[in-house]
Length: 221
Image (tube, rainbow, N blue to C red; front, side, top):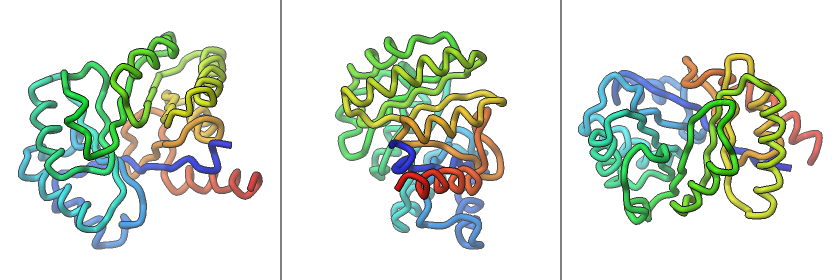
């Protein structure tokens, strides 16, 4: 059962490196937890600040996913190329956001992600992703139809069993928090939770999400 092994990443962003470091030093964040670093949401997004962040996380052996979203391909290229100097454990690259060589990410786990809407075709998304040989497939769709969500999660459950892929399936929507929990229990190897502010609609606060998943672990282990 996927929910017994799904790893929850807390999505975080700050003004700059000093603010992030302060959260670790005051105990609000813990080096032993897993985080998604949403660098596109930081106040300061230059490479000098980025280098300090990644060096600090690596020095303290933090498990993290590095994510940078932008509509400017040149900016994305600059940030990811610079980030790879520090070999993050995992990087999340939005499919089609910029042209890259697969070998750029040889020293890290590559998560290829797709962010879309209720009617997007999950089968087609997976086929397009497979051409990039990702280590992790991430599909995040904004649902307004419960029936479509149930069709998609059923398809992903069987696809994952057949192809043994690593999957982060994120049903988004302000009223879809339970969809996120169901996905983490049924199919996802990776899930996302919120810190002080949500980074996507429907995110559940980290301690609450982890507590709910642990209840299912206790029930089925």
